[in-house]
Image 1 (cartoon, rainbow, N blue to C red):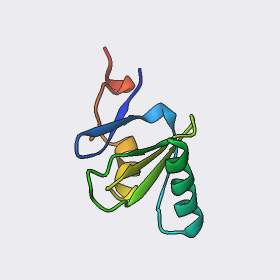
Image 2 (cartoon, helix red, strand yellow; image 1 turned 60 degrees about the vertical axis):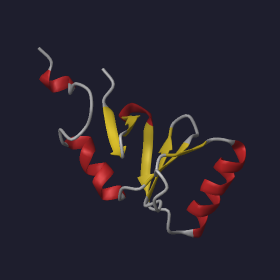
Image 3 (cartoon, rainbow, N blue to C red; image 1 turned 120 degrees about the vertical axis):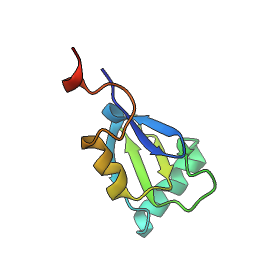
Length: 90
């Protein structure tokens, strides 16, 4: 079963589709984000706040989040996400 990861402000992403979570600080990542916006493949989940992480999916979509990459990465292993954890199913 797919596990949904909370990426902030009520937004969730399917954890099975995430390839990487990176910081938007470098110029190549900023270009990647801009190109994705131009193609219509960017999803802005920042709710008007500063982008602190860029989530790259296996379907070439880019998701912008206002949470730090460390915070999102930590939610992969913690219970701070939505949905059932496969290890807790009965």
